[in-house]
Image (tube, rainbow, N blue to C red; front, side, top):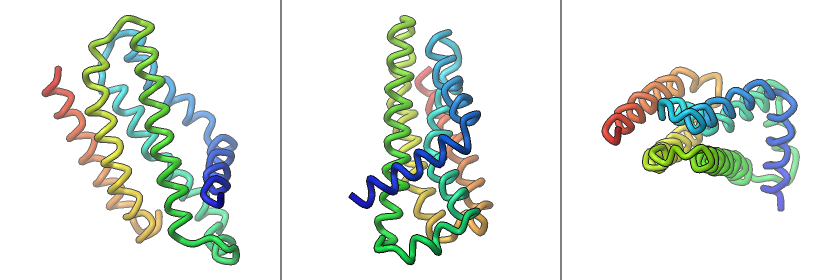
Length: 163
């Protein structure tokens, strides 16, 4: 029940703070599916969705949410689980949106690459979230950036193998 409340807090916060980012992500997900274009744009969209928990952590740090959360009966593991659930739901919904758009547009060749992209986004989420929780967003920014560059390169290489 607490995790559901934390998830809703993050969703409301992201919706209020980053509508432009969400529109940009939707464009990255839909343009390749509708035009049959480069699958790399779709993987960028899913990677941006996997970064949403980092954005939520940044907003939390900016408004000193950690102090408030420690005063509440919420465990650190529940905070982590809420962010993880946010990332997983975002990636799953993004992949479903991209798959539906590709099917409706008749570009089924993109569906072959979608599992690779989803696995890359899930692996990125599994590696980045513990790092961000351990170091914080400000201290872990350089490692977070290096991890992002590595995953974009690996995702591009994997998509190149399946081209």
